[in-house]
Length: 269
Image (tube, rainbow, N blue to C red):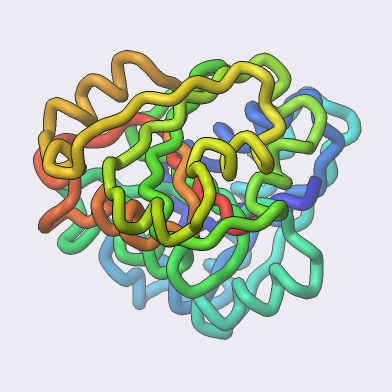
């Protein structure tokens, strides 16, 4: 498993990094701790312009050593990387070069960001880079992900690579997944196939069940509150842009009025 951990040296980023290490505690993994010159922020989220490149590298090494000590798996390998390129370009290049399986990133809470529940940087990565991404909220503590929920509206095309991430041993061995269908007859009919068959064809998890929800309830804040009580992780398909926006957009999505405490796994296949 090749895991890219994006860090700005904040407690939010460190919490996400530790969550990722814990998630793969039984999986041989290469962890790349990646910091960017234009992504170097302080604890308050403001640009830390006073820090020199030397200071950034020192901070990176400090966090690198902390994560190395946190891991209990002898088959975990760590490498620290610093880049002066911008966030999106550097991430895209590194993902391709190292064949990254998953990007791990901290997600600021709704009270400390302006546009999206995941934070501007995280949402930008989700939309611009086709790589699986795990967004870990600042208030999230690690819990073995045994109960997953996948909201879906079938407006996006499907292929057999979407759920490849679940094929890695040791990640979702004991997981049960609930597919929450957002009722949208027109988009479902456009596929000329039973939408549930599409999921069963590609999702290699034995314990799968389906629930249906009317489209109008996707904006109800009680929905996210219920989800957080019943599940350990939210899974979203990167191709399903409607769901990405409905769940993650602070202005009009389900997360608009409720702080999300669950990790969100975005799958790009």
